[in-house]
Every structure is written in structure tokens, then in C-alpha cells.
Image (cartoon, rainbow, N blue to C red; front, side, top):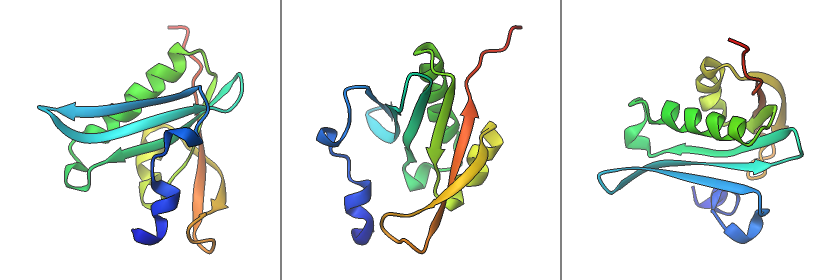
Length: 125
């Protein structure tokens, strides 16, 4: 973890004013967080979605995902993009995101990370 700390450390000064962070807490315990960054007028990036390792598999990731998608729709973006940890790709695929490419990890350039997209268009139903 120490080798990837600079890449994963949250530093608010790094981000644009159109940066949104949501922290999920229950009974005063922080369970996870997600963050969104505006890319352009139509696209927002899910920059982070993190669940405390001991809480994975309890529905908190889905709760954070749902919050992020709702916020992105409320802000009237048309698509959400993300770069996933390879182990998290199946989670995002289950949510409806599709792989559109890959990119090298900043911490480990030989490690390829899936780039995924999720359309935010509302249904007419």
C-alpha cells in the first residue's frame, strides 16, 4: 500500500471545483466513500468508490454506486466513466457499466486497469 499511497491519497487541492465527495457512515463508523469529478458538460468520472475491506459484500458498494449515479443524473450528465481496479470490474459490470478500454496504473505501469462507461440517460418510463 505504501507504494501506491501518492496515487490513492485524498488531497482536495488536486481537484477541480466540480468535485463531489460522499462519505457513507453508519452509527458514526465510516464505511466507505465515493467521489465524482466533472470531465466535460456531458461526462462525469467516478473517481473513487471505496468500501472498508471488512465491509465488502454487505451492500455498501451498491449503496455508494446508486448514490453516485443519482447525483450524476441530478447534475444532468449523460455518461459516467471510471477506471476500475481489475478485481472490482465484475462489480461495475453487474451495475451495468461496460468496458471501453484500459490504461496503465500510475503506480505499477505494467498493471492494466479497465476503463468503463455507464450511460446516464433516463428511461422514458
